[in-house]
Amino acid sequence: MASEAAGTPGCTVTVNQQAREFTGPPHTNALDFLRGLGLTSCKEGCAEGECGACAILVARPDGERPRWIAVNACLLPAAALDGQHVLTAEGLGTVREPHPVQREMAERGGSQCGYCTPGFICAMAAEYYRPERAEEQVAEAPGHHAGGPNGFDLHALSGNLCRCTGYRPIRDAAFALGMPEPEDQLAQAPATAPAATDYGRADTPAGDPGRYRRPATLAEALRILAEEPGTRVVAGATDWGVEVNMKFARAQSVLAIDRLQELRRVVQTDDCLELGAACTLSELERVLAGRVPLLSLLWANFASRLIRNSATLGGNLGTGSPIGDSPPVLLALDAQLVLACSAGERVVPLDEYFTGYRQTVRRPEELITAVRIPLPLAGLVSFQKVAKRRFDDISSTAVALAFEVDAGLISRARIGLGGVAAIPLRATAAEQALVGQAWSEETMRGAGGILAAEGTPLDDHRASAAYRQAMLGSALERFFAQQDSGTGAGA
Image 1 (cartoon, one colour):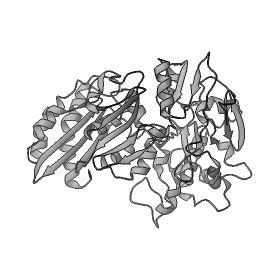
Image 2: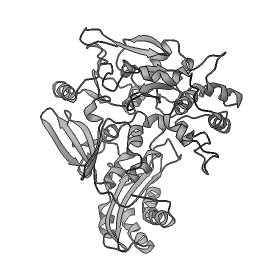
Image 3: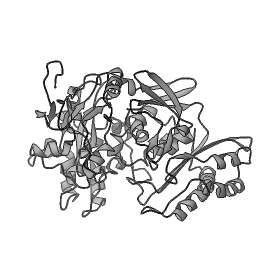
Image 4: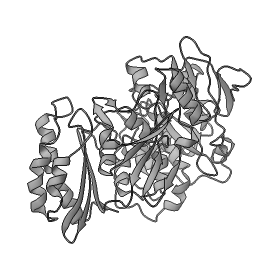
């Protein structure tokens, strides 16, 4: 591991069980680093984290024992892997002794041109080793397309795209996998990964073309932000990685906060649920385990499993994007943000956080440390994301709803909107029109016209303004139908 105290520059990464040194600039991604080592199974396809051709495995802490996680190497800074264990497709098996995932893909015709196959292999291997899979095995496949009799969740492959073979043989290969054998060394390998508090510092030398640092404490991170204006903060790098690849963004100072323990706590009190801003979405999904139904609806609609394994709530909110998937949901949950700087911290309601297109009240020296969700939760909820693809796509519109109904009357209504204005916003006019009204289809239809007038939707390549207004106008009736049919979610 790179040692800051000893003044050793660069980073040490264990790749396919072999220690490798990285001393490149902070904008170098893991894909380029790995390909520079001759590990060419890792491919660049989209360079935006959408196709999965670059997927690799990383051992990440998870309670008492780490687990293999699949991530997009095209977005992840190579320096972020300091002190960690990485597997590429080459490290899973050989031609003579293929890994079970590789064998099933070959035998069932899951590869044709082969370009996307190593990424599929790595994503499938992460699901193959997922500890919970053993408990989810069933005698017959569930009545939906996402689950197999072996507990394999096809959503694990939602971030991997194939253009020639088609998905049926890949699905067949996934569903044919057994459980890891007791002698499978890779099933034990994550036990040698660093503990959550023992990650590499990844402190590359200062100067051109920049410096990458992973501070040990929140206080250290806040000091750097106060002393070095313009420092780029990254966690999962799912946004900054795209800017580096597509816009050639560079930074003189990059601050990695993904392992700050102060930003990775999930705490529940009588009044609120506090989610650490640096927890990945996949981690939150596992920890919350359905405790917040509206967030449960969000997870499957947020990009792909590969992205959710790196992306954080703090990062999604920090960009200030009007089309992020989490802001509408968190607005409907009445969330608050905890912002910290070296002088102290403050709490800001999320509906007061966004001030303009990609602009917020957060000051340059501040970090989002946590998201607070007030308790108790609303009883009736829905998340309606409209996009051109069902998964792994940017929304045209997003509507999140959280209602409380008492004695047949709507006593509470919170509606968060995304993609219909320069900022994510609350549909306050529609909320006010709904409170006190009967919980009925007629009420929903009447308030639909008010909701359709919220925001200032534009025509763009994803949808027309008229289409967005139509989606808003029908959202309440769709919500009512979901609850009436039992397909919605309740707390």
